[in-house]
Length: 164
Image 1 (cartoon, helix red, strand yellow):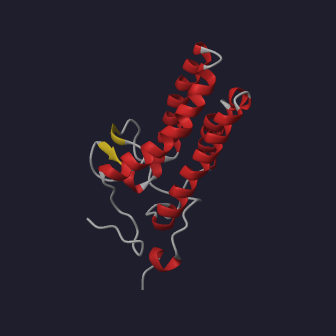
Image 2: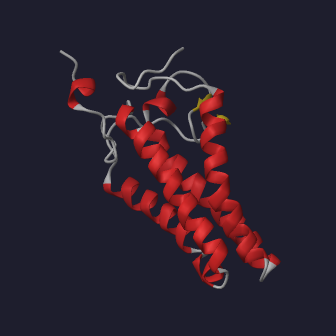
């Protein structure tokens, strides 16, 4: 399947998942390294929090996405590939609790390592630039063609959302 920037993205390939996983691995591993340089225990806490934040995102954000609600028992999206659908699909727009939990998870992932990153300026720079690059890649390549039309970050042009 060839993906065109002039159409909504209805399916992903495994290579799409690998691309975004590699992009996201840079800030996550940078944060883990900064924490590890000071404490193994706090690094383990960070990794546990990262898993917990991912579970929160799956439950409150992803379970509403059309990629989650479609047929099949496993996910095939740019963030989770082959993972079982642990939560029941909940199609529709995000509710206040969904938004709050999703924002909390993102703030937790980004904010927790800042204490240790601030002590490692080089790693802080890598973390900041790689996080910005990841966010820009998702915004540019995915949000502008997203099939989840109720997502607050959806940036698909009206001509794609409502073709005439």
